[in-house]
Length: 167
Image (cartoon, rainbow, N blue to C red; front, side, top):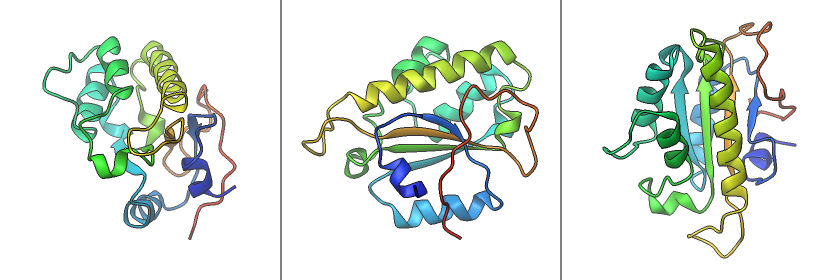
């Protein structure tokens, strides 16, 4: 399966680990060539704690000003996203967490909560109807991209994805 096929699918896993040599080229490729998928890059180095994660996701996904910076509000925002550009909403969402080996490294209990919320959001979108098309389900995927050789010892609570990435 190609990365594009995976990102256009509403099937799980909605959270997965993707090991690539050049994460920047992957993000650039997807951002420029796949306009129907809303692509967002989050820097795991800026998400070492829960508060850091809330700030980084809020900034990158343009959460509304009323975002409460807590897990319930985070889950609500991930399951809404109506403020993102309408022309891209119908195709789906792909959030790439680069340097994921640093994600919540100072808050292991919060990492578990994060993974549960992301999986719940993926399931929510998979069973929702798209406002931009007549099909049921909207793809929503969060890909954890560790730094080269990073996070090998970490328990990710997500499968390593076996997808082909363009070079």
